[in-house]
Amino acid sequence: MFDNELKLVEILYTNTLEIMNTSEEQALNEYERAITNLTAVYGSPIQNIKRLDDASNLFGCLQKAGCAEFATKFNKDGYAANLYMVDGKNDDVFILTEYTIPKK
Image 1: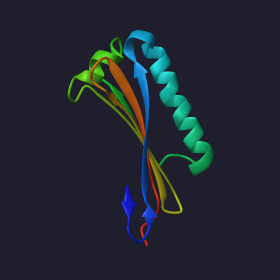
Image 2: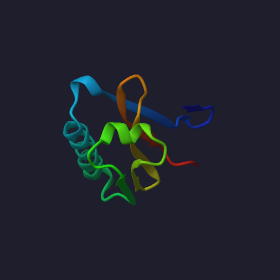
Image 3: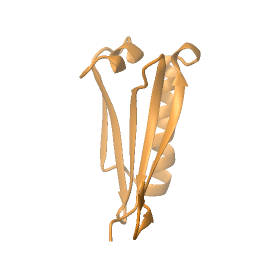
């Protein structure tokens, strides 16, 4: 996203995992790896929600409203990074990372 005065203010990065080629364990490991990488840059998360109501079926649970929530938020000097794992429809799972700069 661009702002006329601030220029680039937001970036959304999507890591697409194909369910047919990714195990649930691999998806969870990818999410944890992303948390580790962001922690190295931003420090400890200010929010870390990992809720999975049906631990035996991550992908199915992500497809059901309210069954799973993965959200980790970071903030360092006003620079924010928000990480989510969500159902991407069409047999995909998305690990989304949203980066924003401070507003002046």
